[in-house]
Image 1 (spheres, protein in one colour):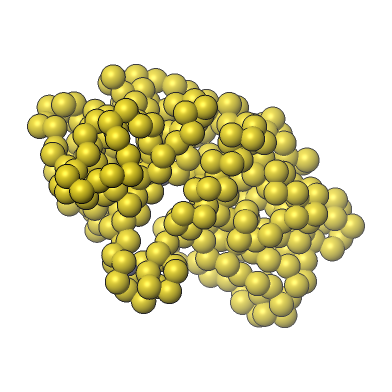
Image 2: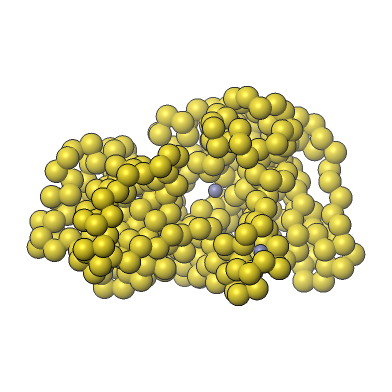
Length: 343
Ligand SMILES: [Zn+2]
Ligand SMILES: [Zn+2]
């Protein structure tokens, strides 16, 4: 089969021919139809400090996909060949304390398929059966391929409880963009988007933001202040991971408000805790992955009900073989979500 592999610890990747893997007794083999490129994949492709510390080459990357069950292990009874599926790629251990206390999304021993094991940028991949998510066949393949990042947006929005509240989203890359219709569907009263990229702010308006602010303009905070009568927003959804955005995002939240942080800073972030969090009585939530599998149920319902339209967020659909052009588009910031069609 064809697989997009990191062959050595350096920038780039190669389309290689490798044997089709065989599923173990409690695993399944999935034939990949569509896969999408995550910011994480861009880090792995470009080979940054994080990749160098985490990834063992050679390996196949990619973790956002949909496909069809090709073959099931001897003990698998819950799916059959031909079923339309995606998967939760965080494989939890099942025996650590968070796992046993119903918090497997923060498992201490998590392994991520596409990071710690061969991923979905290939014609086939292996998934443990308990991580398989059966997809409603009514969901088109290009949407089914991005349920994983959509799940990140859903998890963040649901954790923050946005109902009839004003919401600011800092960083409208693909997950920040997805969070806009999700927050709307969850009943947000107002949604504001902040980013440095004017194209992304345009997209934010198209998917339902009430107002957008350029983070490049220092008066960005002041804008949302005016729109909320000077009170600040009830909820911050931080999706950028930029220290600057986290700081100005926290400044935007009203006293007693909530900040849900999903964006991952690449370095330590300096925050005036007293002014930004303690005196304001903020509730700060760290968001990791998707709740297993509550978030998946919520995500699928939002898509099948038609309340979250992903069309404007998928800016490019390309052939798997054109991965180099796809990664270049991601890097330029021109693309939001790119779906690669495999086969
Ligand atoms: Zn991802
Ligand atoms: Zn665990």
